[in-house]
Length: 128
Image 1 (cartoon, helix red, strand yellow):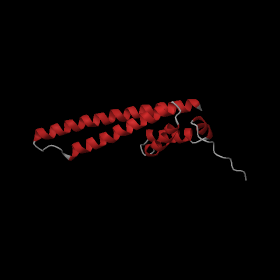
Image 2 (cartoon, rainbow, N blue to C red; image 1 turned 180 degrees about the vertical axis):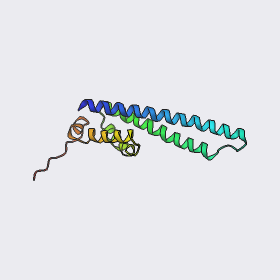
Image 3 (cartoon, rainbow, N blue to C red; image 1 turned 90 degrees about the horizontal axis):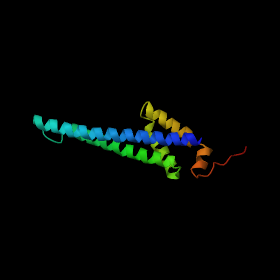
Image 4 (spheres, rainbow, N blue to C red; image 1 turned 135 degrees about the vertical axis):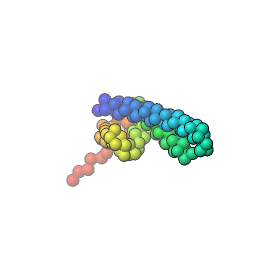
């Protein structure tokens, strides 16, 4: 199971890197859009450029959060497990890769082996 924790952590780091790259490219696109609109006389601060800035900010923030959480999972920190479980929920809506990553996250981290590895108490077994 330890291999799964490492793979999961590195997948989150990789997804975070893609998020940071996407956010950065959207910021560059916003600057280019704003400059192009200024040359045509349409004015500055067009809604399209602001949309790219907002989208880029979300991707950048999400990418940083995913990379930090993935690193914490690789180092077996308790807060990393919690953060990755929380980040898996919005990832489920990103079809198909985010959905696969979310399902793999839940499969990997919602069992007693993961609880033990990350310093959480094991769930009590109920007897009938």
